Length: 280
Image (cartoon, one colour):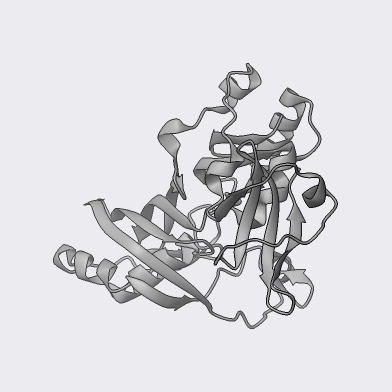
């Protein structure tokens, strides 16, 4: 048994909690996930089952979509409403006519400073560990890309917007940056991940359906955007031997009967493809 399961993660449940439920339900130890969701966030979580976990570095899941809510007038130590309020702007006045222009100003490749409570590792420690110990640490900016961003609604001091962005984009930081450009402060009020790569939340199941064994395994090969090369037999591949192939791609996916077997990379020194990861 191997493949992907699309889960609609509820609030108040960690991504690891979901992995634990899948592991218990399927009675399989090797379970992983693609893209952590915070406990207070909800939405699409892709679960990798058994051998599919080996393919994680090669999955085309960089593009993600979120439905977010930004609450103006407050700032918290976590960048969302579940944190401690550290500043207020009771006199904020949002010019709704400027919202679209401000959102569009984030389009393209930009630099972003991750939240202090993120899981990014600096000098061997996670940022949230420094935050819990009240230790200030310099947080380097990271390059992100916003492909699309649009206002959905604005009412009662809360902006609802949809954003398509690259993996590694922190919506909490984006919310704070949007508020700054609208001359106030703000924090993330709610977050739902609606898509990862080609997979959408509409095709996901809830936790209760999973517990009832009502799930569908999706083939992992569909999530790997590499040139596919069918081989037969596969003895040489499983032995890690070099392959002499007439292809132009630097990295290829070797398959057998439409199942992923290994990832190979071209080596200029000998003009052959070498195995970089076995997937069987």
